Image (cartoon, rainbow, N blue to C red; front, side, top):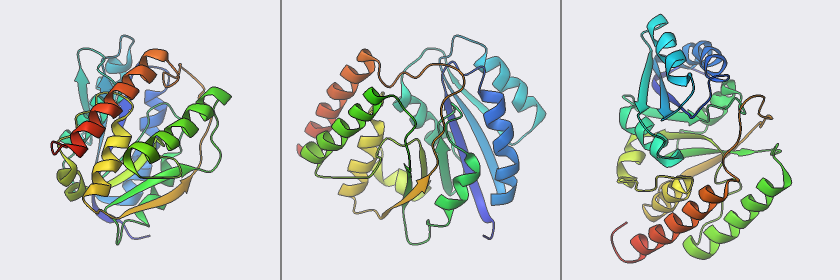
Length: 236
């Protein structure tokens, strides 16, 4: 595959001190292979461990690395919005900063961007506990009922956007995990072209997942109902 002219890459991190250096250092050679001009934005969502300290150290070693940090933890949606707002280039790709994806598979998404506005990954085999699988299936039903849309793996943390597509779906309001539903629901309303690509999912080696946390689930339900109201009453 030929290199793309420009590529913004970002990773959302929250208390990922054991993952951030490995994730970023693995991504740098891939970025060099994929794009003529590139940047990697390390988005910290109010970590209380050494995530920010490590991110700043990495940024000092390479001018293509950028740190964006919130003083407090605001949620996954807030981290993604920070990544989008700081991205400088025409193509923007993100994947989760927990090491559960292989960033070299970004080439799979880029190979589908011609003729598409957004390319989203779907996990061939999701390496999660049964409760997370249960929540994923509930989310599929929930999104079909509320928003009339179905994607194979809507909350897969590996997505590629044209910056023009991001501009069309702004403003994004969700602070928590429902941000991916908001992105795709608004993209559907704008008739944007969305491609789906298979990616590999790996087990988390370090740190804890928060997606099955009751507080996260309640927040997602509340934000999805607000999103439905906004979309159906002219404010979304």
